[in-house]
Picture 1 (cartoon, rainbow, N blue to C red):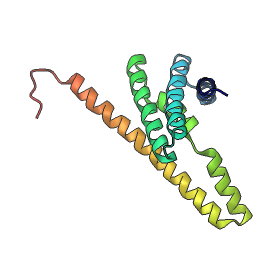
Picture 2 (picture 1 turned 60 degrees about the horizontal axis):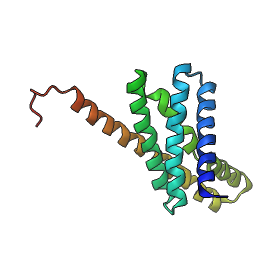
Picture 3 (picture 1 turned 90 degrees about the horizontal axis):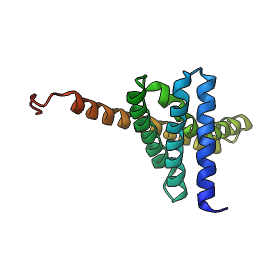
Picture 4 (picture 1 turned 180 degrees about the horizontal axis):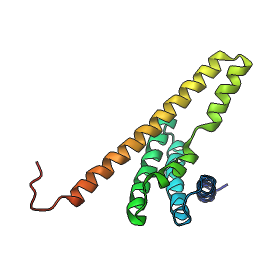
Length: 155
């Protein structure tokens, strides 16, 4: 399958999954379209980096950074809380399959594989948290620059 077709399919399904999760958690209708774009942007960053040889941690970190930046931009644009866009946007990045595999291997007694997958889940969750933190820091820096009057000295 050509790469551009895979790109479109990945974008479509990540958008649909984000909007579907937004519907499940009862987001306002005016936010659904935009939270779908945040989730799609994050997943596309992850998917492209992972397919071009980047590790899962870096791909998740930068995907979460993309979701956080998109969420902050859309929150300012729509005048809504940023968490409305960030939480559904996170859904495509969550390592649910790996977490399931870790629990399954734990139940089956494969402790080595379970611990490997469990550590992977924890590291991916940490990478996602760091990505969101970096996006929030960038948003705070840009907000302070936009709010600070020009006559106030910046030290």
